[in-house]
Image 1 (cartoon, rainbow, N blue to C red):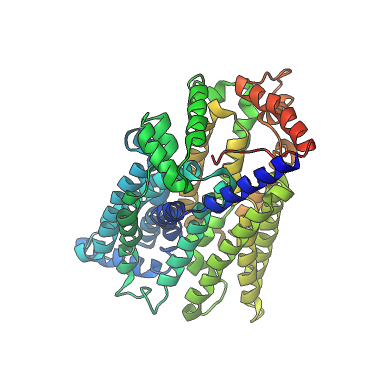
Image 2: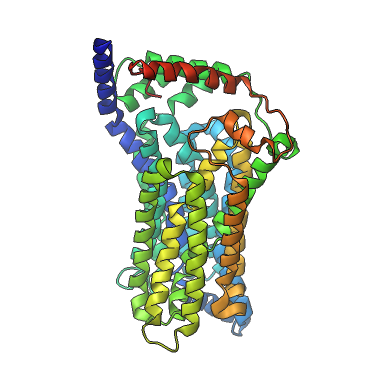
Length: 522
């Protein structure tokens, strides 16, 4: 028995050592650079040049109509410029299922770079052409790019990664979103592109990550699972496995994917309408809708889109704001990393409730501090700290867990439809925040953030009473957790669930005997 354990330990060690290959790291790095990085960049890039863009709108309006643009029209155009990014994201999400069938995972990512380059040209040349419409259309197209990227990139990374490092490789997606936000803040500094004569270069930069991805990604393999299950190309799939895993014998991985393919052939994928009709899934669907809506409506995007204006209202000197803003991107990145390290220990539900509750608390403090800023010279600094703590609270749970829950609350045949519903809610709510927050801010002034306090508290209360903890639970156990509230007396597991459950006791028995299982890399 000891010999078996020693041999298995050696194999596990070798597998771990071969897990990270140059090919895998390159695919993750350049895949995220031209995809999620651009999404994060576009969340923050509109902050620094906002006043210059509004001045450009006014100048163009005067040249066309020989009169200054009205303040309400400026607000509407600016809100549309910010929020149409989310409408593009929604449109991009709806095209993913068709694109990945025709072009594959890697092919779709490569094709998506065309959107980024076109958007960069439109937004960079809009001022020269005297057309603010080009800027708005460009924002829509880069939104399409982000909608496609945020669906395809996680799929590609998950399919090319060995199981022992799949989570680490998957983190490239969220980390590069944070890095994109931070880069948008850095390039928006007055010393770089945050000037009236250079703001269009902020949008021209969109083409740089896209071109870099176009230069490298074609030389990296397509997803081997896609090649094997959908293209039936075993030769290319074998080469892809060998490149990503760094070993020659990949027969076990190929057979595992074949077995998965045979299983999925017996599963009929459900549509979003099927989810709404299915009584046994009613509260799972409601939970995903509420959680994803709160994810966007809790106020963090309002901070990203309008950071400069928020800090101006808080009383900070105009010349210091671009540098103060940099700290928000750093805090987001740090908090996201910490959350990823503790989620399997703490659980999904506690982190979500804690995140929403602390966000509500710090939004309340921010409102208080903004109302007292004229009485005390040091009050703006407390407002700044409150904003940092709001960001940290968001990234501690609400920033990533809603996407995890969407996959956990549904079995295989319903999962893709669930993600379509979640994506639709995500982008519609994103659009609503970008469009409505300027008007909310004008109407409520320093009390505008109380709206987000209400949203966060609603989310926390709902999750406290409805959401079961999903950590370390099987699909059957999660379904049974919702059985009572769904008024379903008996939840019968699918064959897929039965296979999982029937295997579990055997695995536990083997572990009690002290024998370490040999797992394939995928």
